[in-house]
Picture 1: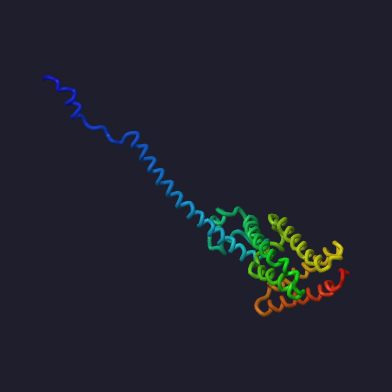
Picture 2 (picture 1 turned 120 degrees about the vertical axis):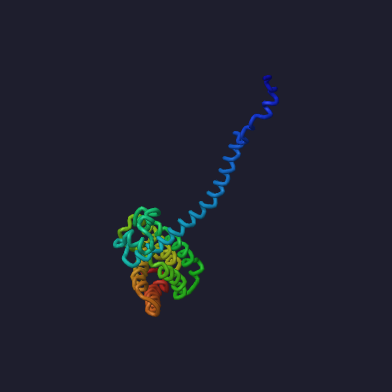
Length: 243
């Protein structure tokens, strides 16, 4: 039987699949684009969830540190307070000190902002009673709203924030010295340092009582603190120099 022409055989041959190399490449590119878009959406969501979890753990740590002190606190207690498993806590913080350092850094940042508002230069033009109000009220309010700050900054056994605590004390001492220097320009550096240290010592002792009380009793302790400082400072500031 004679052979059919090649053209006819070619016409009846099965067609090659359309999934060519170019098609496969286009499909992969489309898949990658879709996956990339999904990742772009998912990443911020995961990040937001992580930030919320960190905030939850820090709030829990603040409560535990205030209730038991840093030394007696534990990661298990913080996890229970946050209503999460210890494993979840360890996904974000390796130990108790890391939590304290993170919380301390955040509170220190806010405290420095607050100190900038309390020690405004224009406050120096006010009479001493009003000056005490302007400086003390925001500082006391911040500590009452953030009792963990006092527990961390004035507690012991927290190696990760020792330097920050010392820098905070030095910064406050310099601010108080600056106020005294304005009113007592003839005071020696030694005298200004000694009086500033006494003022901070009185404030810290009073703040312990203020934080341990509430309502009318707290207001009474705040008033007593201002009275003590007023009676201590008024004779000095009225004199031409510190004695």
